[in-house]
Length: 191
Image (cartoon, rainbow, N blue to C red):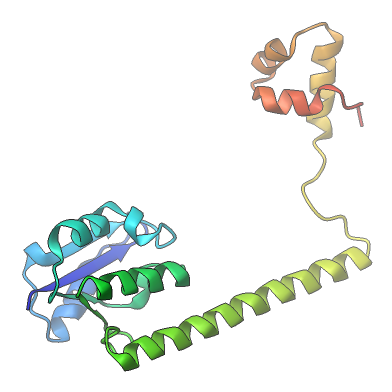
């Protein structure tokens, strides 16, 4: 069985060295040629990351094992992480995440644990959404004006250009704004 490691960091200030070291210290003797490292946000779906996509499409085969230090190295989006793991399992690849009590996500227990984590994450996301909506309703009830402040200076500047007889494109050029912004403010009255 061939073992691969996938190590990801989000910013250029970070390095994957600690992840590689921790995986090797956990007993996985993985040669450098089988360690895929990349610097990309976990918000980017797994199969849209060049390093991960290449690993899946060109290196991993049935019977191989993929090891990650933490589940969040595969991604932040629960649905994407689950789909990625399911796709790897369908391909015949064992998926191991060292931060979980049952690291082998390909096992029945691992799949169950992953589903439970997903359910808790969805529950928490729903609770955050509910608290946010409650907070917005409370703020509105207290008279707080929500949303982006009105761009009265922009409207005034656009209206001055219009009054001078400039076209929308000339106004955009003079003010250094996009034509869409000019059009939004073209027929508004000064505030």
